[in-house]
Amino acid sequence: MLAADRLSAAKLRAGLGHRMIGTEIIVLDETTSTNDVVLQMANGGACEGLIIFAEYQTAGRGQRGNVWESPAGKGLLCSILLRRNVAVQESARLVDWAVKGIAWTVESACLRKATIKPPNDIYIDGRKVAGVLVEMRAQPSAPHLAVVGIGVNVNQTPSDFREELRDRATSLAIVLGGPVDRNTLAIALLRNLDQLYRADFL
Image (cartoon, rainbow, N blue to C red; front, top):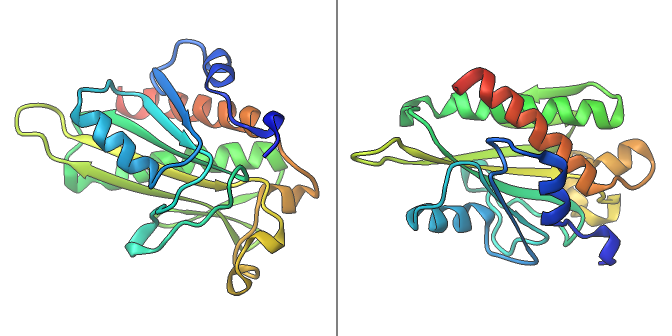
């Protein structure tokens, strides 16, 4: 991976300014799952709005026990820590928030209609481009914590997908016919998520 292609926590923080989503941003080269890291940090007292990005996940998770696959440095793989008074059984509200923010961002990036396929996937031209996984943990004497995991296919080429996925998955680079600056895309995504979060939960 070229240095210019790497995600930069400093660039992301500079592009966000003071926002609820992105109070702390960490970029890891590799981890099992960004959700795992956020849960661990949450147990250590991390603040709401913490975001962990990873260039590569060895055990990325999707819905229903599926694996979220992404080659190193090609996608946006991140998890966000939230501490709101949202009941565990209302986790669908957080899924709706995340998929809406991703759809906005994807549509702006490629000027193409993004379709939300309930409950947690985003499609372009009939192919999956992004997904969301929300994991909640009940806290007996504090607001429940939620970890919102996001995966967006950004710079994958068709050969980056397993053969059986090539007619069902896509990336922004495939749609646009060329690579996308992931730092710029990440900043736009976090700005949109922050705007929607303030409107829906604060």
